[in-house]
Amino acid sequence: MVEEHLGTRKLIKFGTNSHVISIPKNWLETNKLKKGDELFVKMKPNEISFLVKESTNPRKIERINCDKINVWSMETKIISSYKANYDTIIFEGKELQKYAKEIKNILQRLPGIEIIEQSSNKIIAKDLIDINQITVSSMINRMDMLARSMFQDLVKDNPVKQLILKERDKELNRLNYLLTRTLRMAIETPIIASKLKTSTLEAYHVEKINWVLEKIGDYLKRIAGDIQRAKKDEKMIVLNLKDVYQKYLGTMKAYYKKDKETAVNIESRIRQSLKQITKLVISAEENNQMLAYENLKNILRDLKVINRSTIELN
Image (cartoon, rainbow, N blue to C red; front, side):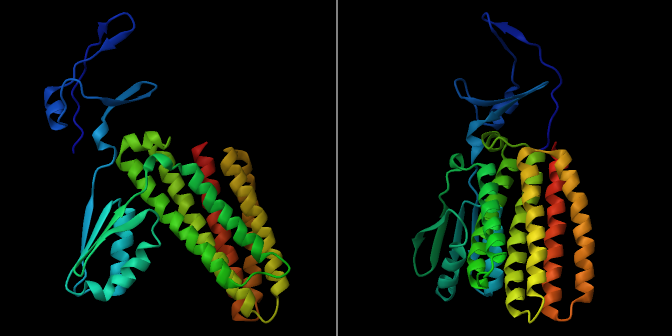
């Protein structure tokens, strides 16, 4: 819908403490409003918005035809539909049973999605999450705690096996999907943004941090495999990993405290670490050493994204 500017309206005194303004008839008709209906009021300095309550959770239905499709295309369609806030996904087609097990496996990776109906030629999955029970800060915190646990397991004297980190990374992916979906909903629906206590600018930066934390999980999972396969220099890899972990902790602390100056200082230290690890990449004697150091560099680059968001938001 194109934004329409309707000029000015005069304030009319109403009672002892309130004032009223007139609302155009065509806007009321478009939004199917009548006398007695409630509007959601959002106030900022120099701005007041009136939003229709019924638009808090618009229904979106996606239909996926399972005929003449491969598993990878199926996965892409399902995850894309989830992130795009389709609250109902309907699977249909003569070849549905061929993909039924794979569909269930994919849906299990998406928080809140449950199959509510299934037959030989139709599966209906619906989002059952209550948006009122979600907070952006709690999801970022949960992702942060998972990433920290992965760091901690890798810097132990006896690092855990890659398989354990893979399970943690799967949970990070689940939270990433849910947060992406939630933030998009906030951007599309102002009432939900208000409930989540976030602005469009904040949602933009939180989504970047969301993706960084998910990618860090991927890099840590790969580093676990690199360490296991490396024939030498394992202690040096872990030593540098410990240094990267300290910079991760400092970066997240600055983000939570909205500490712009600390974020600037950490970014400067990250640049120095990047130079040092680049030298190790060049001097690496075997492929797994080189890959481990490259993944450490990737983590440091992503930490710069979080620090930039902290700086720009404060």
